[in-house]
Amino acid sequence: MIKPTESELEILAILWELGEASVRQVHERLAQTKDTGYTTTLKIMQIMHGKGLVSRDEKSRSHIYRPATNKSETQSSLLKNLMNTAFGGSAQNLVMQALGQENPSKEELDEIRAFLDQLEQKKS
Image (tube, rainbow, N blue to C red; front, side, top):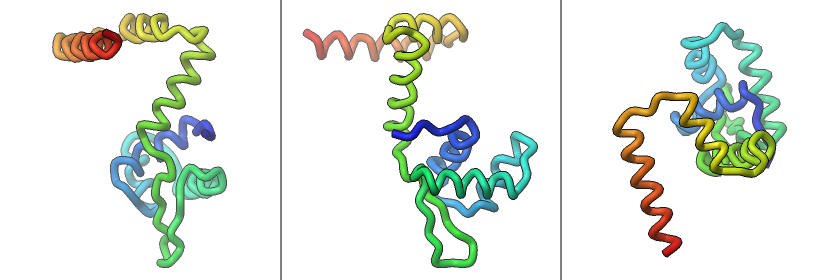
């Protein structure tokens, strides 16, 4: 899988949420949180199309873009890459670092425990 840049990931997140969008729609969403120009958004989306990260419907005047990659698959691929390169392949080190950086709520900790319980049951 082609590794998206940070800017490409921001655009993918918008497309995953919307399902499909024009450059204008993506740009308006990006502009809510960062200072970026329309032509910059257009150029990034054109590059993403060239990389195969998005598909483009060119039937109408304003092209409609759709994510060509599944959110879950992309997250999994990025996480595996991060774990291998930054944590020597250790899931334990990655999780410990992630939990140490944040202050998880009781609900989040309960969900993590439930997930760990499910993993243990699968191994039994």
